[in-house]
Image (cartoon, rainbow, N blue to C red; front, side):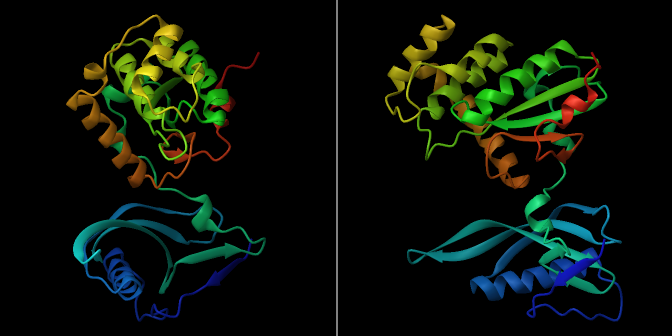
Length: 277
């Protein structure tokens, strides 16, 4: 399939030599500095790989620390940027002749450190296929997909390992704050059924009273949790780690599922590896 390239004029597109990672980072740094009128303090390539079926185009996912002036104060903001290279060319937009926009359908690959014991929910760490899910218990699609995913992996531990990350969408689901904190405790204690029960609480996703949410969790699971328990510093630290991983993987919605390090936009690719009935 032919690839149509949309090149940004701000970047030099003709080089004497092939673009290296270092030179690509230099051009991206210059672009972001001109675009934001702010200095880039640090730039890092967090993931890079050849794009299958594009005749040699490579995608780079970059993270930049940009020092921006916000409300008369300078603050360092983390900015993500995607770039594509092939030979002596660099572009931020890569489309094929059908209009497929690779910047919208590709995500970074999962780093090895994401597959740790704390996030292993069910399955076997040595299984052939690793699945990573980021989920919000009040997301309707999560409610439909994730409990089934957990059960499928639990039934086939020789095939899968499921790593669970909390991604509460607090702007639209305020009740997710307390709920995901409770779910973290259930995850930590290996209480998988209680974690799954939190996907169907009898409480509004707009509920902001933490005690009301805790009462709903007790009704559903039979477990009484206190505000002190769910607001423990260790839980806040763990959720901050999950949020940082969300940024690294450039996740924007739920449920987001990766299988064998790669983003699965269908969310059901894992079913291809289930035993045939």
